[in-house]
Amino acid sequence: MSMMVMLTQIALPVILLVWLALFPARGVFALGVQALSVAAALLGIGLAALWTMPPFWMPYVYYGVFVVIMVRHLWRGRFKGGGAWQASGGQTLLVLLALGPGCLGGYMAFLAYQGRALPAVETVDIAPPFGPGTYLVAHGGSDAMVNVHLKTLDKSVARFRPWRGQSRALDIFRISPLGIHKSGWLPSDPARYTTFGTPVVAPCNGEIAKVVDGREDMPVPVMDRDHMAGNYAAINCGRFFVIMAHLRQDSVSVSVGDRVAVGDFLGEMGNSGNSSEPHLHVHAQRGLPEHAAFGGEPLALTINGVFPVRNDRIRVAKPVAR
Image (cartoon, rainbow, N blue to C red; front, side):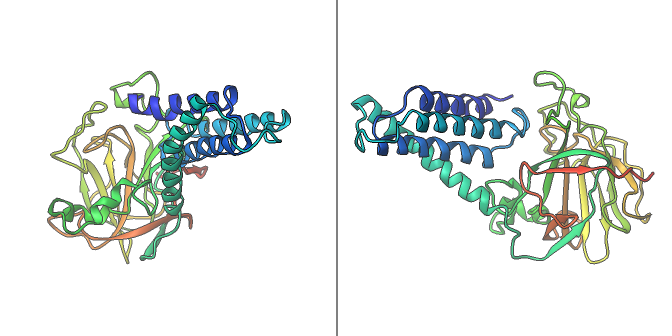
C-alpha cells in the first residue's frame, strides 16, 4: 500500500470523521458547513479513488459512520438554537480549512459521477472476457478522473497516436468476494495476486487476428516500458476488434487465424508489459493497423450491456469453455 493511499483513503477520512464526532462546531450554520465539508470529501474519495486495499466496501463504512455521527448530533440537539455561528476562533479556522478538501471532494465526486455516463460515441457490447469469479474495475468510465486511458485521445501528443485505440479501455482485477486481491504486504511476486493466472476467454465470436506471447511477467511494481502491451491477443469480432493485454507469459493458447466462440479459453491474466500489478486490459477499436496494433479508432465498451466504471464489480458464474 503506497503512502498516498494510506493518507488519502485511511488517514484523511478517519481524521475528518473523528473531528466531526468529537469536535463539532458550535452554531447551526458552522456545524452544517463542517458536516457538508466532511461529507463532500468522503464522497469524492469514495467515488474517485481506486478501492483495492482498502477494499471496495471501505467507503460504505465511512458513509455509515458519518450517518451515525450526524444522527448523534441531531439527537443531542446540536442543530437546534445556539445561533448560526457560535464557533470559537480555533473552530472557525478549522471549519474554513475543511472547505478546501470539501470543495475538492465535491469536484472529484462530480467528475466521477460524470464518468458513469455512456459517452456519445460508437459503443460495442461483449461478453465477460474472463472466467468465473468476482472482478473489480480499476480503470473504466467516460472521464479521466476514473479512467486514465482517456488521456491517449489527445491527437496533438505524438507518442499517444500509436495507442489511440485503447483510449476507452478497461483495466480489471480479480478479487475475492470480500475484496481482497493479493496475499501479503506489497508482494513483488505476481503469483501472489488473485488476478494472476485467471483464465481469459473470448468475449465475442470471431477470428484471432494477432497474438504476442513470450514476454516476461514483471515483478511488482516494475514495468516493461519497451513492450507496453506485454502479451496480448486481438480478436476480429466482425465489425470491430477486441484486444486483451498483459497476459501471462506462455499462456496464450490460440494462433492467428483460429476461430473462437464466446467463452473459448485464450490464455491467462498476467503482469507482462507496462503493468504495475497483475490485471487484464481490454478494449475495442475499429481497425488493427499493421505497425501499431493499438492505433485503431477507439470504441466505447459495455459488458453484457453494462458500462463498467471504476470500482464496479463484475461477477461471473458460467464455467469457462476449454
